[in-house]
Amino acid sequence: MKSFKMLLLAGVLACSVAVFSGCTSCSRDVNSSSSSKSSSTSSSSSSTSSSSSTSSSSSSSSSSDSSDSSSDSSGSSNSSDSSSGPSDSSGSDSSSSEDSESSSGASDSSGSESVPAMSTDFTQIGALDSTKLGWGPGGPKDDRNRSQGAIAYQEKYGKYAADFIAPDSEKIYLTFDEGYETPQRYTEKLLDTLKEKQVQAVFFVTYDYVNRNPDLVRRMIDEGHQVGNHSYSHPSFPGVSLDKATEEVMKLHNLVKEQFDYEMNLFRFPMGEFNEQDLALLQSLGYRSVFWSFAYRDWETNNQMGATAALEKTTQGIHPGAIYLLHAVSKDNCDILGDFIDTCRQQGYVFSPYDLA
Image (cartoon, rainbow, N blue to C red):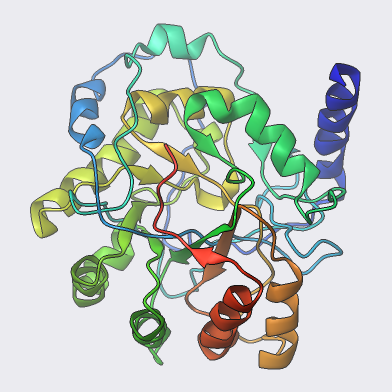
């Protein structure tokens, strides 16, 4: 069994060669740093870590980034030069040439408890593996339609409070990535549907989104959803120092806390790119790292597949413990959300607040 898992993980890494580059629209206005993480980085930003560990009690669910590939549950990083998770396709953050994503925080009323924080010891964290990884849950599936790659990564990295797939149960978690708002303001319509269906979700936002759409962030919070941190300026985390990564998390965390009195504790890595150091850092800051077990190529606003095809794509990916990543800029997602929720419920699934801990 152990040898099988090692072979599976090797296969997962090999998949990165075939992964094509995903959408970079989330990071349109981002100036990302090219510096690598160093184990000797100073801890000047670490003093903010305690503020992110506040627990939340409001419910929410997860959704997932991915591309239009052979695997319905696929998703992956935007970078083709990184070692990648089990991906048949590439995941993307939905931001356009208009806006970069900005993340917002989960409040005391959010649905998941705070994650026990490690000590933010940059020397200790810097000793961990810094190999850049990209995520996309491709590879073979088991008889429950669960990505074996996602299961393998969960077993390997779950110790860092990282979620690639939820435990085998009837629960499904909906998450949305918010990089910018379309002129049609699809997020309003998604919120209308979620309210009608009495489903709670997680919305991962960046600074730019929060800055331009405070009314929608407030509505998310007021209607019981969780707002997750998607970083301040949407850089690839393996490419920035531990100090800079800490600043990216806590700058947005503190901003959302100040503006909305809302405490975030869920984080999604921009473009799904991470390394072991990043996972340990986020855990030390009191955050859970939320990946996904299903996503599809939904972020290309000028290349939507149509409601019928999108509903078929999303429902084919249903599996126990699914973490769905969807993009709020997608007209298809806006059109199918109600029918998707109904289909899942007809199959015996329930939509859960984000209660993984």
